[in-house]
Length: 341
Ligand code: FES
Ligand SMILES: [Fe+2]
Image (cartoon, rainbow, N blue to C red):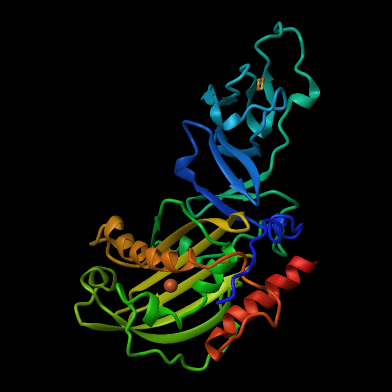
């Protein structure tokens, strides 16, 4: 395989990508202490003041110390170097070296980035946030979030040493199942992918529907709620730009398992990965057991993708495609178009 030279500018310097929303942390991970994250090569500090999460460059306006090395006190983020304190909206509330009657310098306030908490995650936008026609942030929609018969399970944020472009491509691809996922649900003997028909799915997702026969390993048994060797799954895979993928799985028993697979570019070739599961089950199996199977599947993808160099070529001609790659081809076309805008 010809390897692509990795550059750190294809994604990170693209202005359109800076207007997208990206999951950078779980809500529960931002609270008692500030949290450092990196998005598109930009170092950011997240902190919670009151009930809200704020994001700012991880660089104090005073002498550029990393604010993420500081601490929280009375709802303020305190810089570790000279103790300047920052509250809601990044307002500098206190300069300890100045007498109380001296106002803080106007430029001491932090320039904050937009954040939203949704699905148990902190979403961050570095630029002018993309919005839906109704003005709401253009964060992927999972209607099951509002359905009381579903429970939501969040997973820790992991770091994958590969490009977010490689990850979204993989999550839209089912032809790797019988090769990469043999240790979990993939069945080696079923390699042919039926004709892919792309369509508008619900809630702004675009992709395709398909049926798969999956190995029902002991771990899978707990997730599928069935004890047979092979389970039939009615599935769909869809994308939402830039890098969000949703996979839905429905069993004939009525059980549904919805997966939101989120790839966030730390830089062009390193990414955060987190996924969220929604299930309409009876809560008999613990959340930890449920995600153990999906974590094992994710580890199989990670092992493969970390061997691929650089950003996935987004042009029309570099890669060779098969019929089964139709969804990825369309996602790449739209991503490429959005990145040119
Ligand atoms: S560098 Fe932050 S208070 Fe001085
Ligand atoms: Fe996979």
